[in-house]
Amino acid sequence: MKKGIIKALQIMLNVLIGTIIAIAAIVTIVTLSTKEKGVADVNGYIPFSIQSESMTGTIDEGDLIITKRYEHQVLKKGDIISFFSAEQDTTIIKTHRIIEVNKEGDLTSYTTKGDYNSVADDVKVAPGDIVSVYTGTRLEHVGSLLDFFKSRYGFLLCIILPIFVFFLYQLYSFVSLIVEIKKAKVNE
Image (tube, rainbow, N blue to C red; front, side, top):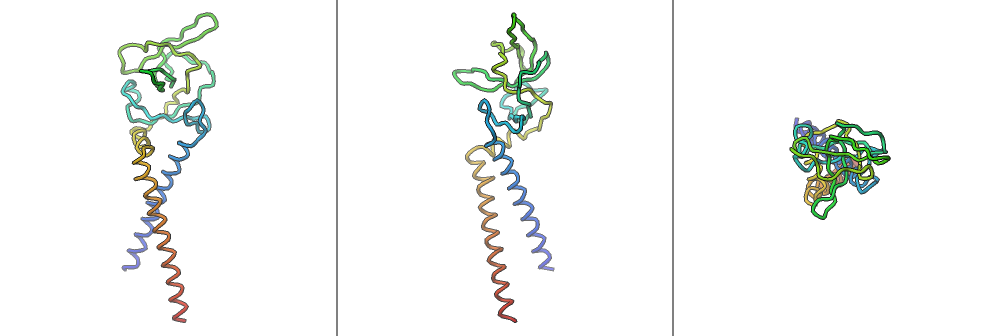
């Protein structure tokens, strides 16, 4: 009976460690993936962790959204785009809805607004500033979780430490196996 419990615990531990390694692999792939315009781009799809409440009602702060790389396709009123924006001497990426398509000769720009905001954004968005277009895929609270994993402490606590523990566990299993083999040979 004791052996059965130990075996079940070993299986559960292996599944837990495997899950942690899978999460670590996903975070690493997203973090180290091809960076176009300074953002992670996984085969044309760009994940963004939402950092503000400006789109509350459609997309909440802490959500992870999946966007498709902008390749100069036609955009229309109502599309949600992620774009570079200057804010207090820093360039950030905002995700807002297009409320107006502006045409002046051959030039196109977009007036955007966060769904939760009461006024439109001050600066019109040029096509060269657009990073991606929202696909409609939103994972609630996953953005906050990934932000934590990408932080120094989160990476250490949730990725490096479990991998180290997994290594020690595998080393222990290997040594135990060698000891059992030697005992079996001695008893022959």
